[in-house]
Amino acid sequence: MDVISDEFDTRKLPPRQRLDKITQVLKNERDESIRWESIWLVGEITEEINTDDPIFDEIADLLVWVLQNDDNGIVKHEAVFQIGLRNMRAKIPYLVNSAMNDKSELVRHEATESLGFMRAHECKETLRKMLEDPSEAVRETAVLMLKRLDRRIYRGEYTHSKV
Image (spheres, rainbow, N blue to C red):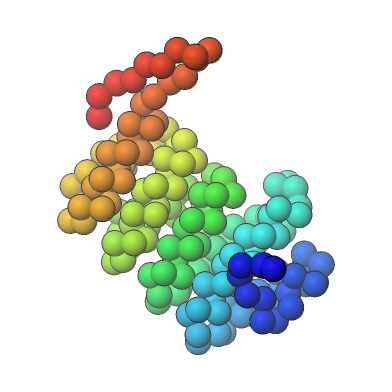
């Protein structure tokens, strides 16, 4: 039994048709719970295709569309999570923007976490700026991700630097 509901039976469709159906749902559905589930369903497609498949980039673009257009912080949080989970590195600038500017504390937290999860060393300065976020949860996430990026593991040798 799948944990994520698939009311539209999109899992039965080939990737192209599934993406098209989910795109329509994400852009037109009023129910945020269905949009949230659709984010998970679109992420599942990436498990069936290669990262060089054009559909992968279309999925990444759709997730960014959600970040820029959805009005629900939980839905946007899941889009950020999928970008990080699927290592969509071309979308790092959008994660940075979400970390710095989204009105939702949850989205800022998840974007900050995704940058660390993706090992986006080029974003360490952004993460340092997140240490001044008004949200304690975002600040704690920034500390954790900076520490994660600063750690080095070489043949069992552990070294780190201070945040």
